[in-house]
Length: 120
Image (cartoon, rainbow, N blue to C red; front, side):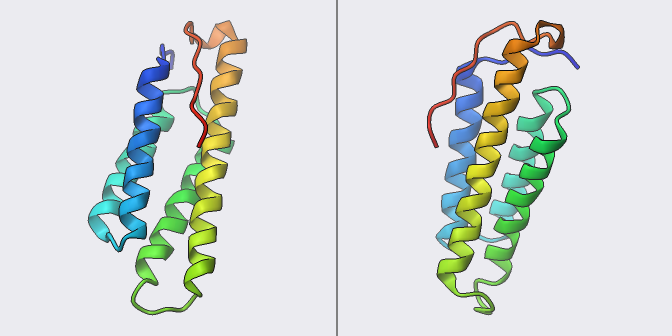
């Protein structure tokens, strides 16, 4: 799949993901998880297939799902759940940045526009 990705478009996706994650941290439930799923699929589909990015997206979703699922049970200490979610978010952001940088370097992928992400 070939696509042209604008920095504004990708930053908008990342901002929306951050807002959904903040909603999850404030006690959001299944609706926020559904939104996160759609956002992650949409974001990674904008780029060439990248297994590392896909795994990072899966990890982020899994951490968010655990955060929601365990919010009423208390099976993990809250600080640990928060740390796992934060670390998964940072990994996803780093993988996305790496995928975009690779896309810039490889003209054959069809990404013809330079993309710069804002810091997470």
